[in-house]
Length: 228
Image (cartoon, rainbow, N blue to C red):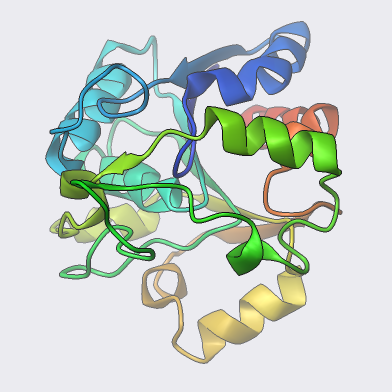
């Protein structure tokens, strides 16, 4: 099965290299995506540009791909499901929850000179970064790509309720399945509360398991793809 891999903020498709290698060995066809504004030199990319790039990958896939989103890109994966519910076999969301219709995509941190740069590690102290050593932190920060303002502040638009019939797997890294269920029940993830087939998978890592647990993450993704 084709597995479309969408990285979160400040990352490009290369962050999936180790995960993709294991997925191939397990018989799947991983397709890491580097989207407009993710290191291609574009500072004027918008959320619509990134959605269009994901949809182009969905439309060109052989069969019905599984779409994987990490962190903020869980919303990108979900926007693809909304736009192509009949073409996507499953969505896997890693360490994040889809934004609601009408909300900004990822206006989380300060914008400078038309972009949202990596804010340093202070906002991620604790469970998010507990498994990252200093070398890993330096490597992530050194390669972090500022997110174009048009992406970060883009408004999420969801229109097709058939999205709720597409199976979803929520991979829980820095939080547990029990915590995720509690947040969903409390109304903090309204989109996931409406999903017909929602499964939870735990992984003992921080927020970036593709860095610290790539083989384990790949095996979880392969299991999800096999089930699809």
